[in-house]
Image (cartoon, rainbow, N blue to C red):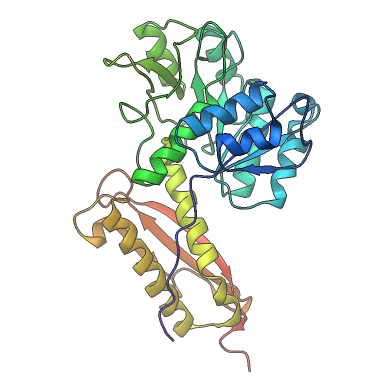
Length: 348
């Protein structure tokens, strides 16, 4: 069986969801530039469209906009309208910082397992209110990150549109595994922070997994944190690039091995899956995705009778275990990918 090459999925397309008084409603609209945004929505303003402009100003190039009536009352229904598309990896609801919206966005991304949610703090909130918000979340998720404070004191705007552009820009130029924080994560077009934070404020928020925006030495505003809202028990998913890299790997592998559905679930298939996935991971390692001077320190692939039971084999489920070392050599984060095959190799 010839080697099947896997292709990397896109990690730069975003989807912004929220209310807007005019333009297309309740259905995702694809825009690919600030000019395209103007052609579609005219000169209209509002948080959703302003966030889209900030996305493009910060290096984003492909964006779905979903203006949804009564978004804040029905966030789950709004996010569900994104089900019809599958080529975005970043989601935000600019300016909606309630616990209900954060939980809905994070839960939606976790159920899909192919995208990541950028949460805003509530409008006008200070460190104490944001701490209370995070501590009061009913469910914490590694598929979401929270950014604080808002920007542009003269006319406050939420951070998520800026940050979505930074994530897209970073992934496009350096790879999804590059940390979207620090001097490389400058917020283009930002004109100041709406809240002046002390070192104590930053430390308290950081301990809760909140990503603080700050002014760096060049006087530019930048993202200064890359933590997810993962619960403490999920320490391996503490950082945004680790979760985003895992999403990238899972989706690239799942979509690139669809041909397995036509093959018998036996050793020839398992061997081909191992070879194809190892070739893909080798390419990502050489690009800098994993830590380790040698392949065996950076990643591994298992697909054989140690990763699946006879019941799995008979049911046509090929199970692949993948380990990758995102932070330190030979310290692996484990992914389990289940693929459908035609049948057991023992079928006649």
